[in-house]
View 1: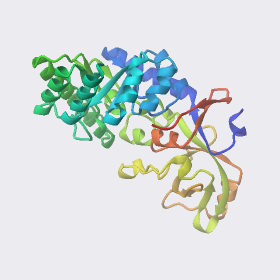
View 2 (view 1 turned 90 degrees about the vertical axis):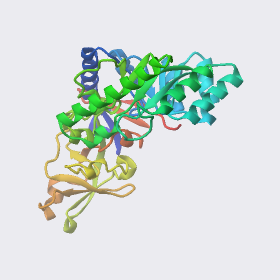
View 3 (view 1 turned 30 degrees about the horizontal axis):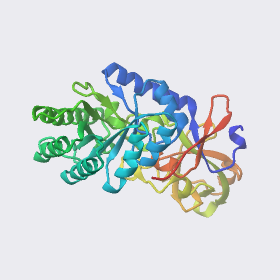
View 4 (view 1 turned 45 degrees about the vertical axis):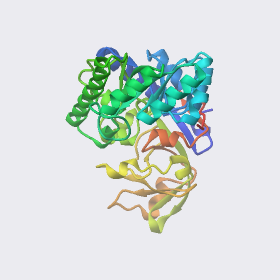
Length: 378
């Protein structure tokens, strides 16, 4: 189907933009001399992941066991489950290992390490386990100099579990917006993770993998000495948060939501759309940044941003498009954007917006589209 024939709302992937983003990231990783393990939680889509692997990626990162199961069933075996493992999920993870999946688990506490070691001892099996390192105070992990790091290494090693590496995620990079700050955080991320790996090795524990990553730091690192691989996810689509961080332009954003004008409220300067928060998500990630895009940036059908307009509000199935502050349209709304007009909305957060849809419409350069499935669940 052609773009203007699609029902709305629909999640669109601009395939040429996506491929360009994939090539850009892979070329950077190749130049820095590290493996690249993309995080597939952004897309949960086999066609996208196959394009990433075809470009040179090695293995994938997942944040749910459902992702691991689906992609393993599709033939991908090298998988890092990058969330500290809950004890109740160990049997499910072991089932994947026993089927031949090279699944790596993550822990970030003494308690979690103990549960994995106990499970493996009772079952007479083993896991490869990585330790999450906190290099920026953003979320979870063990600080590189904490005593608990070596205690976790000891519990895993003595429990017959192989400490396979360390990993970190500089999530605070999303709060930055200058090349200098991003480069500094990338350096901090690298040095902290490398230091944690060295401490484990010095204590006699194996630590082959040193894995770092976020889209902003991956695109800002000046060197990655001591790092073996990088992980990043949202780069494949980019979004308005990444635009404000400074690592992409709006022309790089490959995900958009196709929507239709369904009404006008001239006295309020509103144009009503059929894409509300059920299509865009409630993520307001740009609200704390220098440039707030509301619920998304409206564009014409060809992807050109509509200057002076913002998706200012969203109900469940209604989006409200309004002129930028200080401007008015009034009775001219219907002339500028008549009912039936189709628009594209660039999202604040590609991961959240994609999660609203069971499928994507892949849009090619010739205007044709095809369906790419997307799965849900944990």
